[in-house]
Image (tube, rainbow over all chains, first blue to last red; front, side, top):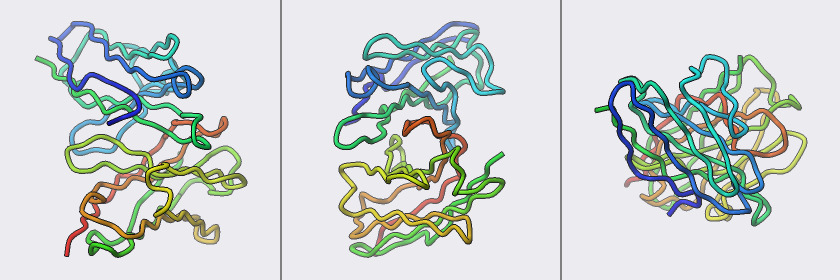
Length: 111
Length: 122
């Protein structure tokens, strides 16, 4: 059971906007930055969003992140078939001397 | 642009020690700008953070794995290593090494190595 809670699946049709939620607590999301990763089938995860809402160079602005209190969200607008992937949220957790925690992952299907 | 590459045996026997090395190129492990980490992913499952360290600072461990994990650094080869002792089948996973921009310890991992599958089986 993951410390950060994500829905196991999400779906949308091309062009649609979808959001993926990530719920945590005051010791992780509530007090630290949230990061989002995209993992295409058979590949290593790729950083999608850093520091809650910043996009690395090369990530389309269709991807956006937000955080409020102990929850965060990833939004994907103008959904494309190539967005079909697993998405993970992550944050640092201040408990037990500090450690990183990941969400369980959300499998996004483009219908 | 930093590049990381994992290496090590793909098969480890139960109760033995898993040993992996991450070779860093286009950057120095001693850089004050980055920290370094290991993450794993069992087949068909999600990501699990193992440990992270900052070269001139502390090492941080997943509480559930801490008693079995050792992280070491070889600056002469620009490598860092993971040793996980007393492995069982549940340690079968793709193991990734990754780096993060140091702003204090965080869950920022970019880039990642390509990953290496380690199977625990007799």
